[in-house]
Length: 113
Image (cartoon, rainbow, N blue to C red; front, side, top):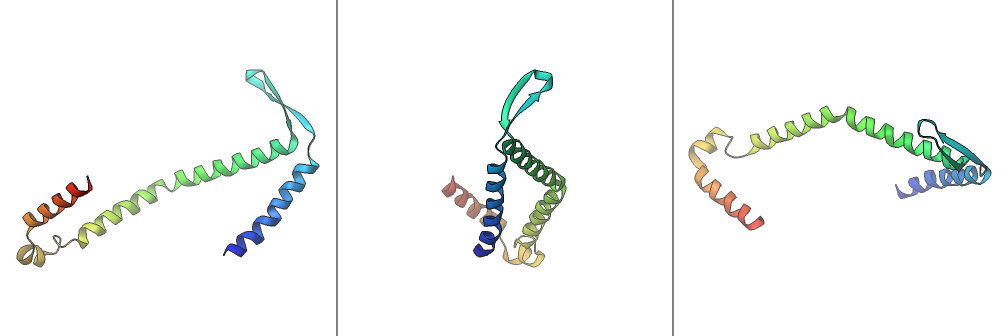
């Protein structure tokens, strides 16, 4: 897997370096409503635009999956609660002592805290 990342990243890095070297001309960027003008190289404008678009796309994808992540956390909580011994009716009725369980959990939480 490490070799695959090298195979992908080396040509990509070489392309970025070649692009940056061949586009060193300076361009004025005007931030219109603020009246602020900056002179930046063309490669800086293009590469920063690509980076900003990549990060914005990742953020939008993260937001769009928020509901699924929430549902997965809720399903995990339900599964953990159903797997506990106190959920099983036979264990809870005959073999399990909730008072002792609460003392054990209390002593464990005291050790952690």
